[in-house]
Image (cartoon, rainbow, N blue to C red; front, side, top):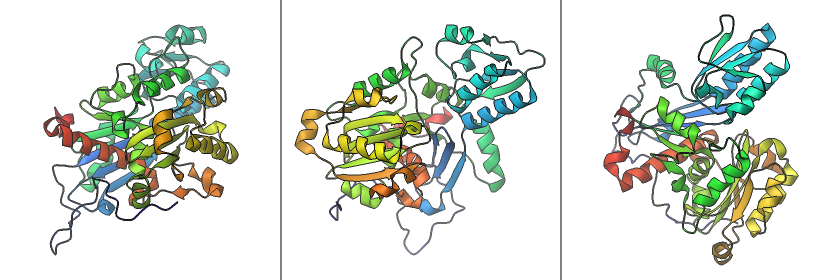
Length: 384
């Protein structure tokens, strides 16, 4: 299905043309936004400046912190060294898998209480698995610092190019929520049930103050005080709307799929309003399953149990509201593993020609939403 022409999105990230003068890449405005989307495999960075064409924006795709930490733990294992984890709570995945392999190799893992939350919220469980919770680093252990975001390091990498970091910073990451004695998959989907209500929008997943149980996002704010934070999946879908074709199609309704390195998310949207969600683990997906689950999401027939029982997070459709609006037959896909959908004939979204920055574009759009509602609060929050 192709969307109608001439539909307005109501907001644009494209810089206005200056009369007869091209924007200089050396000019930096005070309204810049540093958008960082932290995934399992990559950390995607966009330095957005409304005074510049998007094509001139600084754009980076870097290894994620958890991928780097996982490699450091693996190197320590190969060298036969114990490890001491310190720093902050951050996203697990590669780090968590590396910790379990380290213990299986008969080596010791020491961790501060704060950094141990990266591996699991239940410290008693970690102790029972052999992890020593301590603030004191053993003499011969390899020290490995954990944190999702290291702004001084990023600033140092950009400084030789005369690029400075702005005051306004927005960061997206997937947060299962704090659930030490409860399935984090169920807890994650309880979060979706709280937010996916009639009339809710993608921008509802972008916060100046995230829910208290979203400990990963709050840890990011500890490393970047004042940063605006967001759930990475909805941010990527919001950014996909910056693709002209997807933005137009969404005015009638669309299903937008993000096939990430760790999670696969499908959202039913009309404009920016949410009508349904399906969230699974990418490692459990293949083309056939992806096609089946998204088809059932589009028809509104998908159930929570069929996704959860397949080791996913779950599914939810606002039945009465979607029956009056759907089905949304236009399907667009984004994400680093979108090649899984290549045989399905879905539209490959490429907002501003940069698919890997979909989450960053969504963050910028979300910050602009916040600025429209409370401009004094949303501008320059990080500097305070």
